[in-house]
Amino acid sequence: MKFIKLSLATCVALAGLSTISSAQPLEEAIKGIDVSGMLRYRYTDDRYKNQRYTKDDSASIRGQGGASKGSAKHEWRAEALFKTPVINNISMNLGVYYGGSNNVNHGKGTSGDINNNTSTSNGFIGSGLGAGSDGQFGVREFTATITPDTTSTTFKLGKMPLLTPLNDSDDRGTGVFITNSDIDNWSFAAGAFDSWSLDDGVPNGDGGSVAKPYYTLAALSNYDTSIGNFSTQLWLYYIQDIADFIGFGELTWDNNMVSLTGQYAYSKLDNSGPLSTNTETMWNYKPKTANDLYTLGAGLDFSDFNVPVALNVGYWGNTQDGYAVSLDNEGGFLKAGQLWFSNPATGVNISMFNVGGGAMPKGYEKNKLSAFYANLNHDILDNLNIGIDYVQGKNKLTRGLSNAKSSGNVSFYEISPNLTWQYSKSLTISSYYSFLQSKAQRSIRSSVGDASAANSTNKEKFNELRVEVKYLF
Image (cartoon, rainbow, N blue to C red; front, top):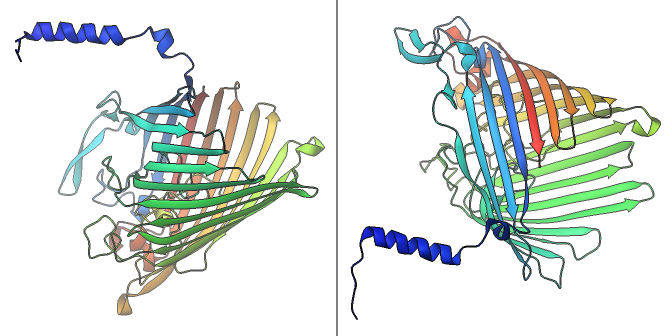
């Protein structure tokens, strides 16, 4: 065989000819591809008084002479999902996203090093888009979807959002998810993922994945009867070395004017694997093995009487010594309000990971939650709705061992007026202003705060303003 040496320029030229010879016009390449997605802008302004029970005027490791008093940021997000036509029962899906933010910090600049309890700052310097890196771009979904002709079954294989009651739409996994609806009024699902991650920064907030197999089975039903619609969900989970068993159930009855919903979740965690103190992980303690959480909700809708008003009320509680039953700190549980379930001062965290409101109890500690919520909303116009959320709760914490054992309550309430303007079918403009006040007894304040006894106080006030513009296509 005779080898011919080619110059770099010749190689590049030949590569170009090869590409052109197999190329096709753009119009042909994208013919039949379905595109859907979202463009979203958010402005969020957070204001604190005595953040995490640290006095505003105390010297603190938080910098700036005391507790953080808040920050403000702009956020941009774009998502697009490309679906190819179904050819021989197979289609391909590519989902991409862009996310960027700019922390403007109320124009106060960013904190520098702290020397002798005095912090320095660079005036009027923010972080993120416009002042630093331009956000992030990535692949949200990359799947093949198989839909056989002989059955109402869909097989999805690849990287995809984890759409289960223990996740939110930004949690992702790589594996297979199967759905079937061959039986009238019933749907079944099964999923197996060899790696997965949560948008709350699990495993380490560095873009990594949890490399533990994740399995789920589900059965869902929906029946219309003369007295209303009945729907049910039952989800079962197993996550190797993390959760021996997780179950989630939901029952709903709805007759248009009145609706009733009950949810129950139970988890039996494996505290001998990565959740154990014997391994070097972010959990760093053995958690409660048995946890549960129940929610009860009721709704009234008066639109059938030409009164455009709706009221929803609900309750959260648990019977076990902990309520870490979810992967994401929010999941598909009924709720109202914006801040109470994701603010460390309340100590509320339903995730089995160290996210959101804070850490769940160690194996010898307890969490007991009691929270009531209500939401009232009114359609002023066909495309303009105003509402208000109210939440009041108590989180009883038991911490420590023997002589160091203590027990106490974190009481909190939140008021969140909100407005939603459906400007067009695709464009929605919304806003809320939330007021959250938390009060912790001294005996357990160190569990939800980060100040020394001399610098701590019993109340934290947290106000948040958000304005959002979302366009769907």
